Each structure stands twice: as structure tokens, then as C-alpha cells.
Length: 266
Ligand SMILES: [Zn+2]
Image (cartoon, rainbow, N blue to C red; front, side, top):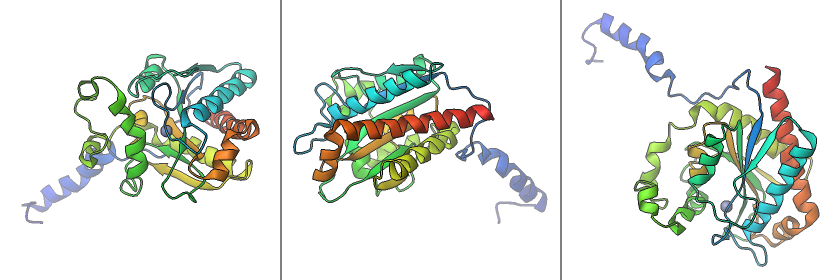
């Protein structure tokens, strides 16, 4: 405590600390009085980027089918909500472009839909990500994989200002982004995982935090859903069926509906 020459200075410092750092602590409470009028649905990968590949399934196709179904259910049942897709066919929007679509349209929610894979073929289950750096090392494989699509883009070095998805150091600067929306993002992510577990009978691996590129820049609550592991033959089979896709899409749809009701009550 030598830095504080007098007791008064120490006291001043202690009083200031909460003000100085208060703004940097992720706000994990829900933000009240918001309307949900516009949602951006992002089917992961597409075009020249197939994403994960199972024995038969390609991630980009599963993601697109489920995303279009979520959009269809919202349009049918929530007439006051506008649905915007980052892609509605087998195109390849740049990773950077996806949150930009949400920001430009002033969307109230951004939901990115993916399917997982692992070298351990027995790994299975769903997980939903929100932005954050908790358990960064444990999740680095998936973080690297989802962000490495950047490397397929032309001029990625200029476009992403030197960001290297394979280098842990590149992730340091993203700690503070999206902090304002973390509470809402977690609220939706929790609902999605609960729906997967309780209504569809999937194994939920829980809500996780990771600095996934597509979650850094949206100026709104944002989640990234991993529907299951295409490297697990049983889960791959389930996700390839029409019924499996409908179950997963309706679980996501019900979560979005419940989330909307919750934030609009406040
Ligand atoms: Zn993916």
C-alpha cells in the first residue's frame, strides 16, 4: 500500500474503483423495456465453405435447413417480427458481413446456427455460445475452427486488420465487446439449451462463452447455436432427418418466442 501516501488518497482510490471499472464488468442482468421487432438468422458457412463434414452430412446444408425452418416458424406465428437471413441459399457471405447485416438493419437479435464436429467420434450434444473469454483454452479448438473460415476469404489480412484466427494473442482485444448484451444473450442461450434438453431430449453440453468472431460485432444480443456433432454417427443421422431438423428448429423458435415475451414484459 505504499502507493497511497495518505489515508485520504487510499480512500479516494477505493471510492473511485467501482466507478472506474464498473463499466467494464459484463452486465449479466437483463436489459428492460426493449421490443423485439427484427431478428437476423445466420445459417453458418455456405458456398465454398462446407463447414464440418460428417460421413454424409455437410454442416452448411444442415445449418441452412434448420435456419430456414426457424424463420418459417417465426413468420407464421410472430407476425410482428421481421426475419432477415444472412443467406437463404448456398451462398458464402463473408464472416464479417454477417453481423454487419444485423447492424445495418438495426436488428434486435442475432442468432447464428451451426453444427459441431470433434476428433473424438463419441462426443455428442448441443451447446450454445455467447461472447466471452471464459474457458478460452478449453474451447480454443472450436473457436479456431469457426473463426478460420476467414482464411478462405480474399484479402482477409486487410479485411480483418491482422486478426489471425489461429493465434490466441489475436483474441485479447475482444474482451470488452458485446458486454452490454451479455445478460440478454445468456437468457436466450439458456432457454435454447433447456428446450433442446427437455423438449427434444438432446444431451445439452450447456451455455458457453467464447470469442467467436460472428458474435463480437453485432450491436444486439447474439448467440451461436451448435446443433450437434456431425462426427457422431447417431447425431449426424438425427440432424439429417426432416423430423430432427424440425424438432431443433421448433426448440429454437420457442426459445426466441419466450425470450421476446420476457423482455417485453419489463
Ligand atoms: Zn460452424
